[in-house]
Length: 396
Image 1 (tube, rainbow, N blue to C red):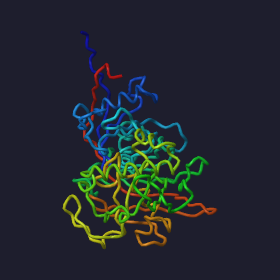
Image 2: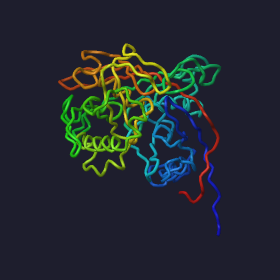
Image 3: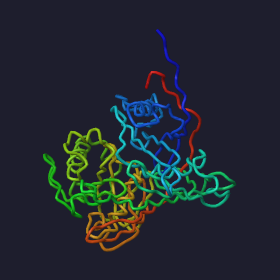
Image 4: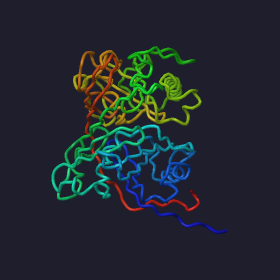
C-alpha cells in the first residue's frame, strides 16, 4: 500500500493574550488552501488535531480548550490605510468544522508582532526602536484594529514587565485599539443592539425567561444577571465546567439568544456556530480568590463577569468579549452597566476567573442609536515556536 509523505508548511506558534494559536502567512499555504473552502478547513483541522472524539487533540497542535484550538492567516493588505489582513479560524475540538464567524481579541495582540517579523509590514513604517503602529483589517468582522508593537534593536520586543491575569509570566505590553467595534445597522439583525433594546426578556423554552442584554460590539454577546441563574459571579471554571446540566443550560440560552439576535434562524444551527454568540453573566463587585490563588477584593473591580466560549467557561476572558464588556459598560441601562453601578463611564475594571482586566470604550448616542467609536485594552504576545507544521499528505 502506497503512503503519501507529510506536507510541510511554514508556521509560527504564538501566544496572544490568554490564547494560543498557529499563525500562517497566506502565501505559505498550499495553493488550494489559499482560498476559503473545504481544503483550507481540512488543513487547519488536521494541523490542530481535530475532530478528536477523545477531546484531547493529541495528534495536532491544539491544546484541547477553546483558548488553544485556534488558527490565524495573515496577508499583506490591499485595503487603503491597512498593513495586513487578519483572518481567524476557531477550530472545533470534537466536531468537523472551523468557525469563521468572529474574531479572537486575544490573538489580535499577536497579529502585529507576527506581521512585522514575517515581513508583511512595510519596513519604512517600522522604527528600529520605539513603537510600530500596525493597522490591521479584521476580515472576519470587517473591522479595523490598531496594534502598538514595541520595537527594540530592530526586532519586536517580546519580553517585559507587563502582567496579564491569566498568563503566568510577564511580557511586553501591546496596546490595542478596536475602531468602531459595534455592529452597524444593516437591516438584517446587524445592529449593535439587534433587538433594538438595551435589555430584553429572553424566553428560553424548558429553561426560563431571563433579563438579557444582547449586544454586538467586538463579538455578539448575550449578557445575563448571575443571580437570575443561581450564581454569584465569583465562580471559577470547575463550578461550571464540571456541571453538565449547567453547560447544557447555557448552550440552550445561547442558541435561543442567537435567534433573537438574528444570527441563526433555527436552534439546530447553533451546533455549527459555536464561536458566536458568546454568553456571559454579570454581578456586582464581590471578593473572591482567583484560580491562581490571587485574592480579588470587591474594591478592586467595578463588576464581575464570567463568560463561556465554545461551550465551556473561559479560564479568564476572551479579548473580544472584553471589548463587548467595555462597550456595554459605557452605555447606561445595559445589564453590564447596571452591575457596574450605572451611569456614564469610559473605563471599567472587571473580575474574571483568573483575576481582573481593565478595558476602555467610548460610546455615544446618535439619532437615538448607540454606537461605540473605540475600545482600548492591553495584552501581550510572544512567539512560542517557529518553523514548520506537518500534516499527512492525504489529509487534504
